[in-house]
Length: 195
Image 1 (cartoon, rainbow, N blue to C red):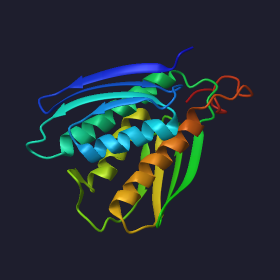
Image 2: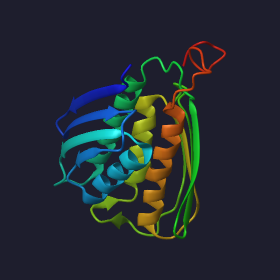
Image 3: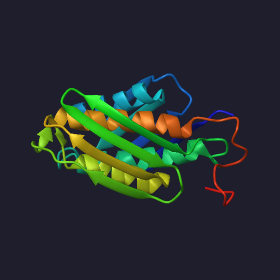
Image 4: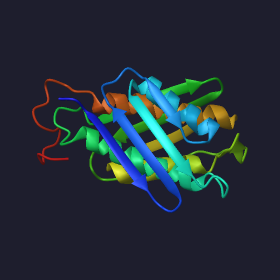
Protein backbone atom coordinates (compact mmCIF):
# COMPACT_ATOMS: atom_id res chain seq x y z
CA UNK A 1 0.00 0.00 0.00
CA UNK A 2 1.38 3.39 -0.99
CA UNK A 3 1.76 5.82 1.88
CA UNK A 4 1.18 9.01 -0.07
CA UNK A 5 -1.02 11.96 0.83
CA UNK A 6 -1.86 15.38 -0.55
CA UNK A 7 -3.42 18.16 1.50
CA UNK A 8 -4.44 21.67 0.44
CA UNK A 9 -5.32 24.52 2.78
CA UNK A 10 -6.43 27.99 1.74
CA UNK A 11 -7.10 30.96 4.00
CA UNK A 12 -7.15 34.73 3.60
CA UNK A 13 -3.44 34.66 4.54
CA UNK A 14 -2.00 31.61 2.79
CA UNK A 15 -2.59 29.00 0.10
CA UNK A 16 -0.63 25.82 0.65
CA UNK A 17 -0.52 22.45 -1.10
CA UNK A 18 1.68 19.62 0.16
CA UNK A 19 2.18 16.13 -1.21
CA UNK A 20 4.31 13.61 0.68
CA UNK A 21 5.41 10.06 0.00
CA UNK A 22 6.70 8.44 3.19
CA UNK A 23 8.41 5.71 1.16
CA UNK A 24 10.22 7.96 -1.27
CA UNK A 25 13.86 8.59 -2.11
CA UNK A 26 14.30 12.15 -0.85
CA UNK A 27 13.18 14.04 -3.96
CA UNK A 28 11.62 17.44 -3.36
CA UNK A 29 10.05 20.42 -5.09
CA UNK A 30 9.76 23.21 -2.53
CA UNK A 31 8.54 26.77 -3.10
CA UNK A 32 7.49 28.86 -0.09
CA UNK A 33 8.97 32.22 -0.99
CA UNK A 34 11.33 31.98 2.02
CA UNK A 35 14.75 30.80 0.86
CA UNK A 36 16.07 29.42 4.15
CA UNK A 37 12.76 27.65 4.86
CA UNK A 38 12.92 26.02 1.42
CA UNK A 39 16.42 24.83 2.29
CA UNK A 40 15.20 23.33 5.58
CA UNK A 41 12.28 21.51 3.94
CA UNK A 42 14.57 20.15 1.22
CA UNK A 43 16.94 18.91 3.93
CA UNK A 44 14.00 17.29 5.75
CA UNK A 45 12.95 15.46 2.58
CA UNK A 46 16.47 14.37 1.64
CA UNK A 47 17.55 13.10 5.05
CA UNK A 48 14.23 11.39 5.80
CA UNK A 49 13.96 9.83 2.31
CA UNK A 50 10.56 11.45 1.86
CA UNK A 51 9.38 12.66 -1.54
CA UNK A 52 7.99 16.10 -0.76
CA UNK A 53 6.21 18.70 -2.85
CA UNK A 54 5.42 22.01 -1.11
CA UNK A 55 3.79 24.91 -2.95
CA UNK A 56 3.03 27.81 -0.62
CA UNK A 57 1.81 31.34 -1.24
CA UNK A 58 1.58 33.59 1.78
CA UNK A 59 1.38 37.19 2.91
CA UNK A 60 5.14 37.65 3.01
CA UNK A 61 4.62 41.41 2.74
CA UNK A 62 3.48 41.16 6.40
CA UNK A 63 6.17 38.72 7.56
CA UNK A 64 7.02 35.03 7.34
CA UNK A 65 4.85 33.91 10.28
CA UNK A 66 1.68 32.78 8.52
CA UNK A 67 3.50 30.99 5.70
CA UNK A 68 5.75 28.99 8.04
CA UNK A 69 3.06 28.17 10.61
CA UNK A 70 0.49 27.15 7.99
CA UNK A 71 3.06 25.00 6.21
CA UNK A 72 3.56 23.20 9.52
CA UNK A 73 -0.20 22.69 9.82
CA UNK A 74 -0.52 21.21 6.33
CA UNK A 75 2.62 19.06 6.60
CA UNK A 76 1.37 17.61 9.88
CA UNK A 77 -1.98 16.80 8.30
CA UNK A 78 -0.30 15.23 5.26
CA UNK A 79 1.94 13.00 7.39
CA UNK A 80 -1.06 11.84 9.45
CA UNK A 81 -3.09 11.14 6.31
CA UNK A 82 -0.23 9.19 4.69
CA UNK A 83 0.18 7.07 7.84
CA UNK A 84 -3.46 5.99 7.82
CA UNK A 85 -4.17 3.60 10.70
CA UNK A 86 -0.41 3.35 11.50
CA UNK A 87 -0.45 -0.43 11.25
CA UNK A 88 3.01 -1.96 11.27
CA UNK A 89 4.99 1.23 12.00
CA UNK A 90 7.73 1.37 14.62
CA UNK A 91 5.98 4.41 16.14
CA UNK A 92 9.03 5.80 17.97
CA UNK A 93 12.07 7.57 16.57
CA UNK A 94 15.09 9.27 18.10
CA UNK A 95 18.19 10.86 16.60
CA UNK A 96 21.17 12.76 17.94
CA UNK A 97 22.45 14.96 15.13
CA UNK A 98 25.79 16.82 15.12
CA UNK A 99 26.43 19.75 12.81
CA UNK A 100 29.77 21.47 13.34
CA UNK A 101 29.62 23.04 16.82
CA UNK A 102 25.96 22.11 17.21
CA UNK A 103 24.37 18.99 18.70
CA UNK A 104 20.58 18.48 18.69
CA UNK A 105 18.50 15.64 20.12
CA UNK A 106 15.15 14.84 18.49
CA UNK A 107 12.75 12.19 19.82
CA UNK A 108 9.18 11.51 18.75
CA UNK A 109 6.21 9.22 19.26
CA UNK A 110 3.41 8.90 16.69
CA UNK A 111 1.00 8.31 19.55
CA UNK A 112 -1.95 10.41 18.39
CA UNK A 113 -1.43 12.60 21.47
CA UNK A 114 0.21 15.86 20.37
CA UNK A 115 2.89 17.54 22.45
CA UNK A 116 5.93 19.67 21.75
CA UNK A 117 8.90 19.93 24.07
CA UNK A 118 11.31 22.49 22.63
CA UNK A 119 14.52 23.70 24.26
CA UNK A 120 16.76 25.97 22.21
CA UNK A 121 18.30 29.42 22.23
CA UNK A 122 19.14 31.47 19.16
CA UNK A 123 21.72 34.24 19.20
CA UNK A 124 20.24 35.89 16.10
CA UNK A 125 16.70 36.96 15.28
CA UNK A 126 16.83 35.89 11.63
CA UNK A 127 18.52 33.56 9.19
CA UNK A 128 17.92 35.16 5.82
CA UNK A 129 14.18 35.95 5.66
CA UNK A 130 13.39 33.29 8.28
CA UNK A 131 12.61 34.45 11.84
CA UNK A 132 14.38 32.07 14.22
CA UNK A 133 11.34 32.25 16.57
CA UNK A 134 9.34 30.54 13.84
CA UNK A 135 11.28 27.31 14.27
CA UNK A 136 9.29 26.43 17.38
CA UNK A 137 6.03 27.64 15.81
CA UNK A 138 6.57 25.39 12.78
CA UNK A 139 7.19 22.27 14.84
CA UNK A 140 4.30 23.11 17.19
CA UNK A 141 1.87 23.44 14.28
CA UNK A 142 3.18 20.23 12.73
CA UNK A 143 2.90 18.02 15.79
CA UNK A 144 -0.51 19.39 16.82
CA UNK A 145 -1.89 18.55 13.38
CA UNK A 146 -0.15 15.19 13.10
CA UNK A 147 -0.94 13.89 16.58
CA UNK A 148 2.77 13.58 17.32
CA UNK A 149 4.65 13.79 20.60
CA UNK A 150 7.85 15.62 19.66
CA UNK A 151 10.81 16.68 21.76
CA UNK A 152 13.65 18.76 20.33
CA UNK A 153 16.56 19.77 22.54
CA UNK A 154 19.61 21.81 21.60
CA UNK A 155 22.46 20.31 23.58
CA UNK A 156 25.05 22.78 22.31
CA UNK A 157 25.53 25.20 19.47
CA UNK A 158 26.00 28.89 18.65
CA UNK A 159 25.28 29.35 14.95
CA UNK A 160 21.54 29.78 14.35
CA UNK A 161 21.76 28.30 10.85
CA UNK A 162 23.47 25.17 12.19
CA UNK A 163 21.03 24.81 15.09
CA UNK A 164 17.91 25.03 12.94
CA UNK A 165 19.32 22.80 10.23
CA UNK A 166 20.30 20.18 12.82
CA UNK A 167 16.71 20.29 14.08
CA UNK A 168 15.18 19.71 10.65
CA UNK A 169 17.65 16.96 9.76
CA UNK A 170 17.33 15.28 13.15
CA UNK A 171 13.55 15.44 12.87
CA UNK A 172 13.76 13.84 9.42
CA UNK A 173 15.90 10.96 10.70
CA UNK A 174 13.68 10.37 13.75
CA UNK A 175 10.50 10.47 11.65
CA UNK A 176 11.99 8.09 9.08
CA UNK A 177 12.68 5.66 11.93
CA UNK A 178 9.18 6.04 13.41
CA UNK A 179 7.27 5.54 10.14
CA UNK A 180 9.39 2.54 9.11
CA UNK A 181 7.47 -0.71 8.82
CA UNK A 182 8.47 -3.67 10.98
CA UNK A 183 7.13 -7.10 9.95
CA UNK A 184 7.13 -8.20 13.60
CA UNK A 185 4.39 -5.68 14.42
CA UNK A 186 0.87 -7.00 13.96
CA UNK A 187 -1.60 -4.13 13.81
CA UNK A 188 -0.31 -1.15 15.77
CA UNK A 189 2.42 -1.00 18.39
CA UNK A 190 0.15 -0.36 21.37
CA UNK A 191 -1.44 -2.48 24.09
CA UNK A 192 -4.62 -0.45 23.52
CA UNK A 193 -4.89 -1.70 19.95
CA UNK A 194 -5.04 1.76 18.36
CA UNK A 195 -2.98 4.91 18.01
